[in-house]
Each structure stands twice: as structure tokens, then as C-alpha cells.
Image (cartoon, rainbow, N blue to C red; front, side, top):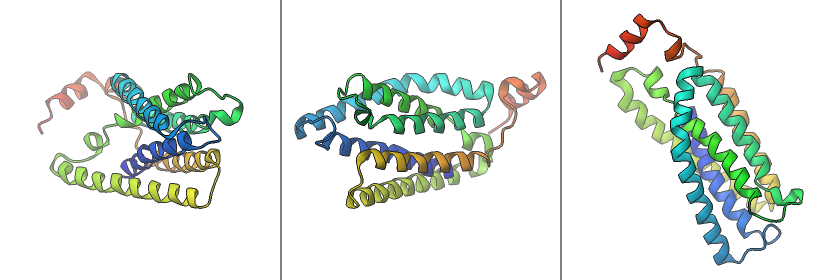
Length: 203
């Protein structure tokens, strides 16, 4: 549930901050109509690459364990948040620099999308209830991120400060709850008998 809460925060927060960044006259000096078009193009870029990366990271989580992929995902997302306001580092052109930062974010978010915590830790008889609770926590993450970014805007924070603060919150929350995730054995580290039992386990 906490996993879905944090995912809701960064999924919604990333898009809200990106719209603010593209409309910031101190950033890329885009006309409003151009900013909307660029925003849509970046979102499409995100979706296409994430579709290809989720299968790879899903297999990786099976091989090396959920917790390692979880921690790596949050670390990469934090790195992306540090790079999003890249124009403040002297890179005035959006392409390719902003897209490089967004590609880092795509990798981090793909790592977190594929973690099957319900399949791993929830009894078959309770998975429907768990999915319902996860959806609630995902929605709460959206609400919290919207409130935070609204408060940043009202306080007239510079966009890079908004990214740094929000990225720190995501990283801190993600790493904190990763300690509660059981490492466990990966599928490939179990014995042949255990793997057979897992495959033959009835729903």
C-alpha cells in the first residue's frame, strides 16, 4: 500500500512539475502552445520506452530480488529529479538534455511499476481487497503530490527548488519503506523442489 502511495506521488508530481517547468519563462522560453505540444511529446516518449523496459526489469527483479530493484528505482528517480531543471546548469537546449533526464526517470519508474508485491505477500483469498486498498493509496498519493506542488507554486518557489524538495521526499519515503520489504529468495535461488511447488500451487 505504501508502495502505491509513493508511486501515486511521483507519477502525478512529475507531470505537474513538468507542465510548470515548460511554462516557466526562465526555462526554455516556450510559447504556451509549444509548451503543451512539448509536454505531450515527452509523455509519449515516456510511455513508449517504459513499455519496453518493464519486461526487462521484471525479469531482473525475479533474478536479484525485489528490494534491490526497489531501492535502485527510487535512487534513479531521485537522480532524474536533480536533472529535470537542467537548464539551471547552463544547458539551455531542451533536446537532448531534458530527454536524457526523462529517460533516467523512465528507467526508475519502470523498476517500480513491475514489483509484484500483491502476488508475493498477499494471500490468494485477500488479493481483491488488497487491490482495492492499493488503489485508494495510489489516489491519496495523487492528492498529496497535488497539494505539495500547489503549495510550492503559491510560495513562489523556483522550479529547481520544487524539484529538489519533491525528489527528496520521494527518495526518503521510498528508502524508508524499502526496509520493511522482505528480501526473500528469488525464484532462481530456490531449489528445484521449491520451484515446482511454486508452479503447482493452486490459486
